[in-house]
Length: 141
Image (tube, rainbow, N blue to C red):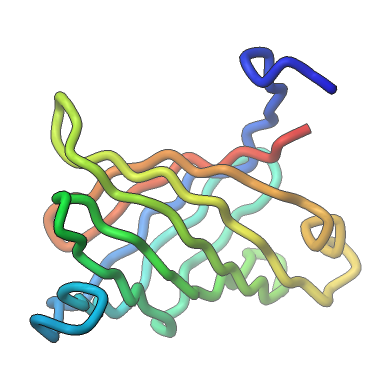
């Protein structure tokens, strides 16, 4: 078994997603649900380039300890005409420089140029902005 402190990763792309205003469903059985629609964005990197479709959302849950559990689905339309579905869960937690997000993206691609993504477990590190979110997405090798 490998030492987790020497985890090898490969940078895939940076994703900048623009977001709708949140819809808040307070006091649910698991916490306060916040639903945030994804309305666009960009994907740029050595492995994938394109746009984020105006289709998808984050169904996050605010938890009693001040963290949020993310549950996101989005669609990437590549510059060369492929569609890639991405689904990720993760945690947003307070950090020294503001909230920090760490997620575990999984991909679904049917276009043969991108089917290699179907076997990828990725990790993304990001942060929310004003009406947006940014991630750097890495493949775990």
